[in-house]
Image (cartoon, rainbow, N blue to C red; front, side):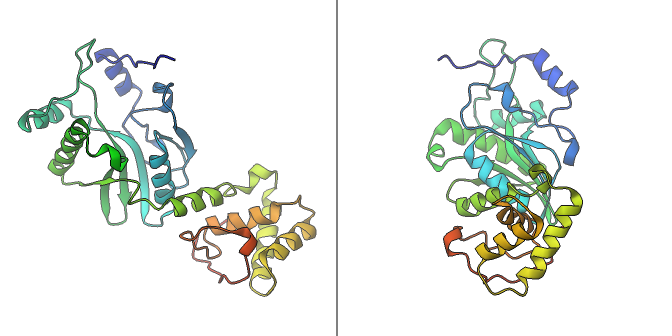
Amino acid sequence: MAKHRRVWNGSVFNRYLREGRGQGTGINYNPWIHIQDFPSLGMVSRVSGTTTGRIHHLMSNLELSLFYLLDWSDDITDIREQYPLIDLTQAIEIAEKANIRYPYDSKSGFPYVLTSDFYIETKQGTIVVSVKPSSELGKPRVREKLEIERRYWNMRGVQWNIMTENEISHTKAHNIEWLSQAKDLAVFGLSKAIQDACCEYFLESYSTIRSSLAVLFKTVEMAFGLVAGMGLNIYKHLAYWKRIAFNADETVNLTEFSHTFNLCYAGGAV
């Protein structure tokens, strides 16, 4: 099957600007690239973000894994993916000074807008991260584009980093993704009142019962007439919002779950 070729020219560039792409913060940020812009790409994702309250457009599994880590971190205050190096004049000048061929569309001759994978606001400041498989870093053209990025953000006094699969904890990312499946109990048809009651019951039982978590799951389900599996979802919900402790760095094995966790109320509310 032929790959989709995105039309790129000055008209599209101006349309993106009118649409507010690459602009805004938090829930109002609009990524420069949307996954539908490249319908032939493979592993792309649209994921609801807790930090921002909006849908994020992620272009690879590596981006997705890093996103889960960022979104669950208490230190992160905003995540802007597919963030543009919007000052084309400066980006082109950087390339020329570094003797790097800046990318132009072969048909229209219009310069492409390079993007950084993540523009991240933290409690300590701003960080920009480019995510690449380690196998890509040996390619000269990849390194040239990354060098343009590095110099662009350095001129703005913004910290810039490269992250590969070697710097991303996939176990932790997978665990956070697993927990996030139950971050909103409303998707399971539970009213707010039932959610609150179930969570409080779970927390009270969790602090006193010394049996296994599997038994606690069943106890909650029976107490509220819930379908099988909802006890686990309540556990995942509470762990996601950090109302109970959860070691996301260890592989989850439900068959080995025992009541060895401590209560932790230092997280968000239900």
